[in-house]
Length: 532
Image (tube, rainbow, N blue to C red; front, side, top):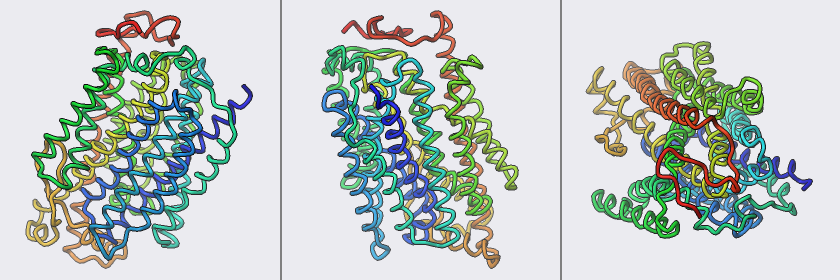
């Protein structure tokens, strides 16, 4: 087939559109905070919808991709990208609650479209380049930092320099949206190895099984509890019904797979990818805001673009690292996790732009290969899952980014800022604290600083006109940001431990190597799926 390259670059452009929208959205958090008065927790929740919608898009798309065909999914994603802009632009400061709902809905639709596209692009590239998946999946996902660079530069020029309204900034992602639509138009789409072999959807699910399904369904339960059911029922009832929905979904997956337990290795990869989503995308959603608060808004945007540039360049070097240096995909992941942990800790202590540049270089190198290399490992070891396993993996990562990464960092920022301000001047804290507390998983509630009052204090400080009270508020915000990054660094530390265990497992079975369907299912250290 002669259209491999065009399909690769069409997928590249589709993920580029997602990256542009993601970067611009991250850069206008402070606009939403100032215009609508949102707290850090509310901003984190809006950003979370920009991830959780992706999960539904990629999971549903992954289940339909081999049966429905990639072309129809591309058409659906294009329409949803346009719809998301319309819904988002309906937000108005005249009604704060309605604006919050419109922004959440717009982010969810945008993310759903992104997930649908990735349900196409990942298995498409894995099928087109079966002998070198790590390299080409890294090239495909170089579009993500590429989009973030474009979005970050546009945000710096249009927001900081020209002060263009955030709606016009966000609309710019529609340009690469039109481009990917044209590039996919009329192209012949290949079928995955599993689809060619005629495997049923149940067969494709067997390696995922109950174990892998439990990871997805646990995150879905939290999503329904926090983002759907809590809107019209109490916290206790929302939690009960949320987990009931998760249990029903898991029962359905068990039935589809004929109660296959699934592969323990794939289960571990799913758990690891939940952590990848939380630390990579969850952090990316806040990093401009955090570094911008510690230094300045413009410097925060520049640093965001810089780390994205590091990722863009390195993702074209996956082949060199794997083939020339000799690191296996799992070895690459282990090194990256260690560097990401070190980089976040270094970033938490920066006091100057040069220090931030060095710290974020380490972090940028660390986060570079996580996402595409994880997809490559799943594709290499579990080919009979078709688009299902890697789509589930992407959904887990994005759902975790929204529910754990973005929301968790927003909660941490509120909590640590409030703790520092109460310690330094409790009277000021009582004057500027938010109306509603922030909550996260099983942690106790924390009432942060009101978004409008914090934004006003930051603006006054930037102009050199801040009062003593405003300086106290911004200083506590900075300390809260530093502690948030330290807390964030525990995630890649856990990932490093997991990758080390997987590396030792592969060493014990003779080394890492791709598996074909003819060779049977990928072996696992325990609970291997029964034969199809």
